[in-house]
Length: 480
Image 1 (cartoon, helix red, strand yellow):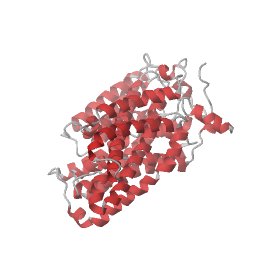
Image 2 (cartoon, helix red, strand yellow; image 1 turned 60 degrees about the vertical axis):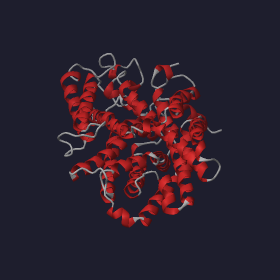
Image 3 (cartoon, rainbow, N blue to C red; image 1 turned 45 degrees about the horizontal axis):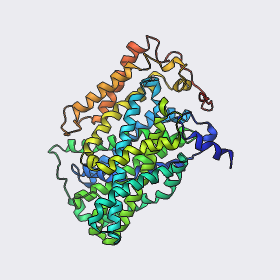
Image 4 (spheres, one colour; image 1 turned 120 degrees about the horizontal axis):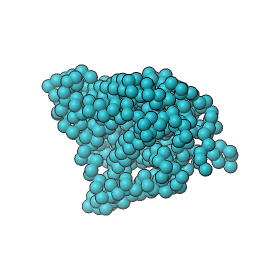
């Protein structure tokens, strides 16, 4: 066994900064891993909600712009610190939020990944049950038994894939990336077969204000992309530098979600259902339906592997979980997903639009604060030792919490809810002149900067005056 093989399983299952020798992914590996993570069933649901307000051409333009702009904000917020020092997204939030205040973004990360993965693995169970019916191995009357069993099986498979850390993410991605091309084939099928219907189809819930419709599609794309903040950090730290991570992140996540969401837009406009496993039989017959069911099942599994890895890595920052076995940590992360999938599977299905809105509510101000802290206040100067060493006072602030970041989050969240209510999608000025996520990020960053310059920096807190950068090759030895 090589030295690299000995190092990797230990290093990439902890939250400590990775050494250059441990950062073994190239641009293509990251691109494949992120593309596999981005291409999942949620794309169809995102597309479905955009298709309620916009026709196909408008949806294409709005969603593509929203996904790419949202990814730009996410990349700016996460990549600089994560790629320079080989750390995950939670570690990158500590300079802005404090040595204890990072619990705020950590909680947001855990809840968002929990929600996404519940959705994915429940979809895995439903798709697997439909696949067995389609190939004649079981009947529709057995679906209520097959679905929870398949969901539980998916949880077991994910844990087995992740036993060796990021190596499992890489191997699964290299196999399941093929489903992206199957997804593009499904998009071609519906566009080719139903173009006349698609070209004239009109959204059923469109507002009388065309600007509101377009900006709402834009907002859905931005909000969906902001939720990739945890994934960006946990996976991009495996590459040597930011130059090898930025383009794969933009294309692999922003591009794949935008492209495959078009399937949902087209499906809901023409056939009134976004899930291709339900409409492909109508367009191409039972063979196409079987292929799509296999695709949907595989797609969700690959994304769940990446999400659960990111979530488990984030929990390493808590002292309670710092030294426990990686297998036990995976079990802790997967257990609530399995319980929800087995006992209350409709929880996220029935409230997906609300969940998607809440993603923007939380991650938009978070990204705004992190961008302002790194580029405007610190100008790229980070004390990496302060991210992990409790004896280093740089990011202690007041009892470990930066009040400027807390205030920025509160104002940012309130701004989002005021301009676009995520429960009802009712809006107030200045929406739709400015997307809710953009306004929330701007408001949070302005409040954060003002509070930092008026209160935090004059008090000598946060290491702004005496921050020193640490070489990306410097490694902090974990405490014994």
